[in-house]
Amino acid sequence: MSSALDRLKNLTSKISGYEVARKENLKFLQELFSTLHINEKIDNFSDIFEFKAINLSGVSLKSEEVGEIKERKYLQILAISYDKEAVVKSKNISLAYFGRVESVEKELKESVVEFVLRWRYEKSFMTLEHYHNMLEPYSHE
Image (tube, rainbow, N blue to C red; front, side):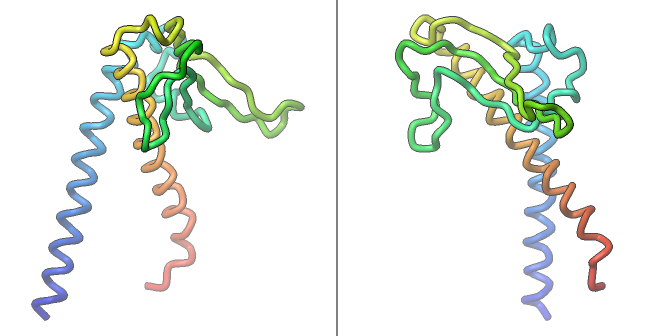
């Protein structure tokens, strides 16, 4: 019995930790939304989650080389929208352009990387919630 109770306490602790981390993440993401002037392209913060994906050009996001610049490229944040009714289904939209990656200040480059990673973190929670809700009719409780 004690073992089951310990597992439940551990799980509860992890879940509450994720919720705290998610709230913190959203707070920082919203700050970066303004700091990087994405709010000049997208009026409402919540609208950034309508995009299918957000990527970078000019900087790597691979875990083993995250933040490394790609020489002779331009740093920009790209959003990918998807319209299943359109002839061309996906479309890239530049949310922010910062110029040649070699000339961008380190702090700005790091903020851009942080924005994309924080957006992906929140988007993964939204995807998890979506599938959780879809599975509800199949619950075996």
